[in-house]
View (cartoon, protein in one colour):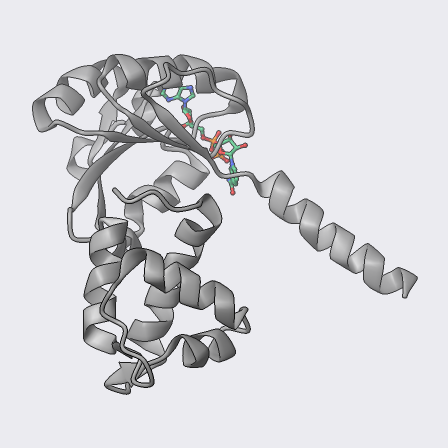
Amino acid sequence: MRSISKSTLQRLPIYLSFLKQHCDSEFVSATVISKALSLNDVQVRKDLAAISSSGRPKVGYCRCTLILELENFLGYNDNENAVIIGVGNLGTALLNYEGFEQYGLQVIAGFDIDESKIDEKRKIFHISKLKDLCKRLNIHIGIITVNVEQAQLCCDELVDAGITAIWNFAPTHLNVPSYVHVQRENMAASLAILSRHIKDNKNN
Ligand code: NAD
């Protein structure tokens, strides 16, 4: 994968969603995208140049080509399978959410320690089956939605099962080997920005 910054990477899905849902012209320029999304023109130009060389001066990008390039770069065509540990409130919602498929992610099973939650017809298995299923189906992505006290233990189980990318919803730091990437969904960080915005507005 070409090396690009994390902030560029996080903007790419936003461009893709705009191109697919809110733009129907054959060609589109970085200026049009930046105006529509209230982003900096130079930034958008640089981001697109990092993943595509199909843009033409004064014409812009062919919209369909750019969509394909973004999807390829983001791996949306690779169809990765993922598993969830902890099928409580959040885990159930994520397990049942069909929208991940448009991002090439298929959540194929959930695992829980609580016997009352096990329901193999609904793809919910006992945690003791995690390693076998992940190895057999060559799964690389694990999602953690257990309570914070259990998160490290579940993380270790995922690593032992061969998982190399972890999406962590539990509000805690996880220790992993260097070849494993943890992406933390940090609500506290997002809320801090909202709270700061409200405070700043009140002070003005
Ligand atoms: P929950 O209590 O409803 O679900 C947790 C599930 O994890 C339970 O089903 C439990 O049996 C299972 N579990 C616990 N230990 C386990 C283990 N060792 N192996 C397998 N399964 C195990 O909790 P929730 O509300 O779904 O929240 C889950 C996590 O997500 C928490 O860390 C929470 O802070 C975080 N979170 C929740 C929300 C939300 O909207 N509910 C939002 C953001 C983050």
